[in-house]
Length: 583
Image 1 (tube, helix red, strand yellow):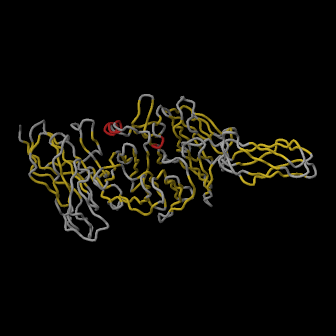
Image 2 (image 1 turned 90 degrees about the horizontal axis):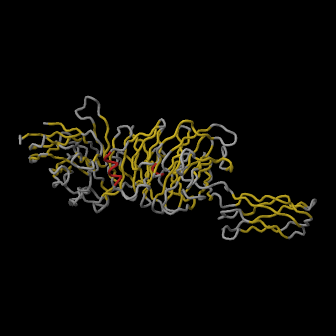
Image 3 (image 1 turned 180 degrees about the horizontal axis):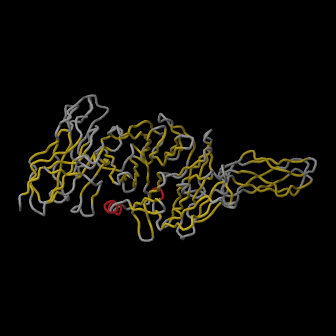
């Protein structure tokens, strides 16, 4: 009996003759040195629905420094409480484009990534307003003379511009006959450039004033963060980044600088280790707080990274490291980890071959979560409809899929994963669903999760080998009592939904064995035979052997097991009875 361990994550090579191992909805965990198998593969976390936003399609989620959870669905920003209830905050432009968040503990900034579009949210009162479209002040340029009463102030947007509702009153000084100041009675909205201020009437002459837009030095942002009391922003479609003043959202027109080491525009920025990483289309620079009086930040001397990103929303941070989907002058489509100012390739040839097949990768979205010691970088490709997860601790990749009611595989439901109120929260990319992600949940909100694991090629110098038996080394006997299982099994062509599990709306318990399935390929992974079931063992049947017998012969065989029973289990590997035939 030969032990067949599982030592790789998902690795379906450019040629399946080399390797045809899929690892779907499972993650690896190293076993102690005295274990007969080096790894155990456990089910990825399932999804438990806890709420639903009134609008569909999540665009991002964020936990403010106050601990409160925010999420954007469609065109609305919501707060989300610990019970999953949503409360409207304000309307956000931008259709379905992902959004960016940051805050300084008092005010949160939300941006769509487009020029000059952004929003302030007071983290105490939840007051919401658009940045840079209301008037901040009206300032006297000439106080005039001989006024006998307060003149009329008219505010009008320039021709071809916009802006409505702003009104103001002049403060008249009777003793001097001058107009000393102006009071805004309505700040208006929708101003993209400062409007014209006209002063008329009141019996005097010569008074004039200018209007200033609130957030006039806000340019929009396609990447933002917080560092040393400053809010930092990348300026869309440029090489520039800019910051607020210390401990405020106020902007100084001089607090702006540019990435200068190469001419590529900024894609986004990230704050790590009290440094600003300016991530361009092909290169990256790192800046720090130098404490300079005119502009606080300066470039870190001697540090220049010859890689940028093609997908700004793929950029994520954990601790002192960054992850992103790389692009540089020579190509793109490699996933990298950045640490100690060096880029380390973490994608495999198999992952890169898969990414190269996608028609679009610039829309890739990265997510990070930490659970029971594993740190996962989850990379989802909306257009390609695929999701991949990299385990930083084990260095392994796996596929994450969601299986629809027709048995077709799609990307995972997550558009955002955040940790709030002591739970991992997932926000659905398609509908308004809000979930908890939990390792003790084995379905996706009552939709089955199909777990699949391929084995390496079994090969004996191209000689025929007989396989009297195959035993899947799995944890058994943990099927919960009262599980609902459908009594019909429909196998589609690609075996993406090989086993329908249960329907929560049913009130009939079907007497059906909970099965795990085995299939194999004798064509080196190019085609597959029909799957064969075996029982995973009922509740308490801890010594159940998952064994298939009389499996024929082959010169090169690839086995694969899969199941979708919603239960706690683990796959370590297999024990295979192998009999060489010598020819």
